[in-house]
Length: 285
Image 1: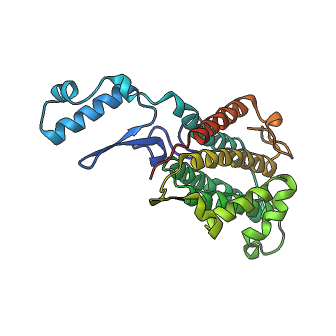
Image 2: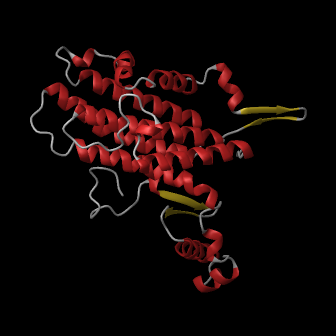
Image 3: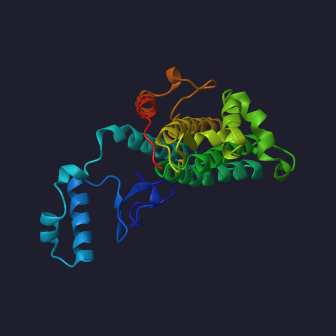
């Protein structure tokens, strides 16, 4: 599934959110994240053959392992499923509410435009989460909250909506999404990298100090937050256009009991994966 508004028939090159980068210092390939292990193996073999100056069949036999080695680890499947679910929910929400909107006021049109453009921010957040860039992800997640708040605040606003500051609209969004205020506060702390958050990326021992550039356990929590924001995004879209069919059905007080079975299953699998990653302290320096 591609993002909303992108023509599948004319789309040739996947976006960065849809590829895995493999390689080393001398070469790198972007492989579609849905590619089979056999395709991945053949692509790596062709790259190695080109760099070393060998026939592809010989490179595959001499330097590239069996296809099984290029299968995605079982433990990573919930992570991939969660990233795909974010896209599915955002696309479904836009397709359901923004395709046939009829006549609108200027404010409603601007609110819809902000929601449509917001899928780019979701897409950017997916890329950052795949790259395990926690603080940068927090900044985009915070932006998603602010833009949803602004769109919700202005859609029936009769004054000069350009004067409304997104940060000042959070209070109105809390009326329909009660948990959004607490989430916004947490994201603001991470995005601003206040002194206490330094402990999230620095570890000290008697003989060294380590700076962590990527911490997968933080990316796991970021993905859970992004999934909740995708559900909130669908809720705001549906409230902007109440005549449209529901996508996730989070209700006025989002919780697991009110989400669709499909969405809840993905969210719970990501939560289990996040707990596993946290317990095993997986990290990259």
